[in-house]
Length: 506
Ligand code: XMP
Image 1: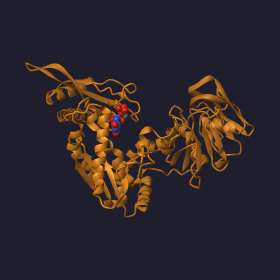
Image 2: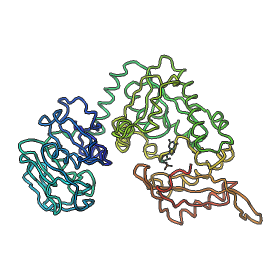
Image 3: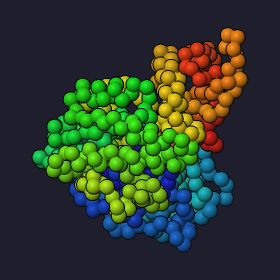
Image 4: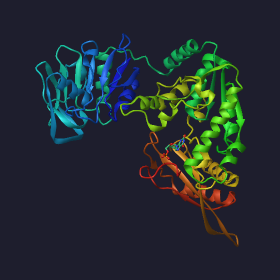
């Protein structure tokens, strides 16, 4: 495997994804938590950083841990750090070095630059530049403005590059990473979904033996794939719990439960609609809604978990980005911290935790799910918030409003599916607005509520752009909702992007 030491760059996860796209396994660690380095490690990558090596509090690392023992590739800050700590000099750039640049000199006999054209396009993003290098350094690539765009420490397997090979704007970035991983580190390209599934099932068998595991299914991709892996390892010793909180989409509980049962999972569906909806009725404040739902879920799950005798483990669908965040240079986020607050935990949270997907990125989870034969409809499902329709009913929640929203949402989603738009957008859903407006139906004046349609394109939910669904399709959705859903006489389409708006309205 490859170890990536993170100095806090926004691109560190991208480096990991590119390495894995080359079928080489890698792990990210914060620069100040270098793991034990053994024979399984084939090379080290040092990431970029928002910091400058010239700062007094610049992130520091103990080079002797790996220098001369493993091949090393320093990227941006990593490269500057290598230069400065070997007797070179790093100074602020006199001109801005952000964006595209062309290499003007490439030593293509150098292993790192094999097959990289002399004018290759690279992506720069830095405020400092390496202005002097020690004698034992050799410049292996330059641009017009950056003399030391890439270097090698002569006679060693240590390299530095000032540009970012991990971003797609660097046209030969993938080739450069391949040169490092395969040509220099001699990694084998055998990491893929099938090898992941085989080793994970073996590891789970060894780890869990005859122990029982409980796992809460959400209907989403992560918990479903985690459950199938655990099921393959321990069979009926995996006890899954799927809770109907009354805030799911129309018929979703029945359909998802049915597909879980078809997969052979040992799953118990719990109808807790009355409990959730009863506690939410009349509640307006979004954060209060979230708290009530979180608390009710814990209550229901805890009770169900107690009904499984001698359970030892809690299975979770945690994925790698959550793990990286909790370990990151910037420290765990506030929400992750609250999990570590051990006082007063419900009993199931005191169990040992098993997280079979905690080394995978989201797209890798989907690929593993596909290789495991999961229903494509389940793998392609849009993200759906844990509090469900509760945060898509703006203001007060009532059973009537839930029923109206479920109907309108079902019409919307069905038309997106039948027109091919469901798979083109990242996430879509209808929102109930507690606004009444005047309308006319037949000869009668109406005074009814509004449904807002939301659909966005996104890579990860962090930023999003509203989807340009054709007017004809929007018109059809609007007609069908107004004609079929009693209580709605107006439909609007949300054309805000994130930022500054968010995907959900609450
Ligand atoms: P926002 O509205 O913050 O949503 O742009 C980003 C993504 O997160 C989902 N979301 C939630 N998921 N519990 C969840 O499990 C929540 O309270 C919650 N709020 C938002 C949202 O659906 C979108 O995918």
